[in-house]
Image (cartoon, rainbow, N blue to C red; front, top):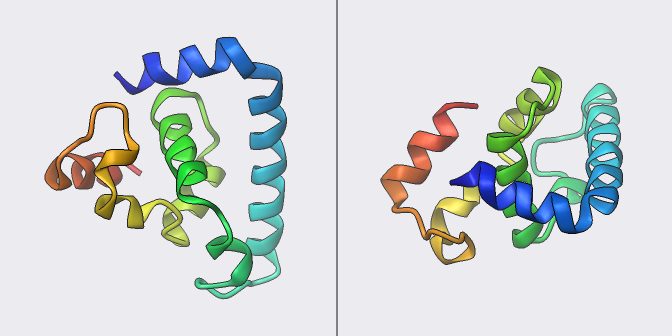
Length: 103
């Protein structure tokens, strides 16, 4: 399911998504290296829909282990459990928690 959603988005706006994720990976990696606090402004600044996009990206694309670990370490997508309506399939809280455990 998530793979198809992301593939549709990528076919439409792949050039923008690739640039977005490359920059996001670089910024998060840099912030992690300099030891930014877990609740730093930079991380909290991400919009909910950006976090959903990150979730789809992580579940459907070959992402680096470094990026996955940073997303997990800072809990970037953890609060999405409270917003199932943001997803195309509106997963239950239990379903979403299971998906998060993969990371």
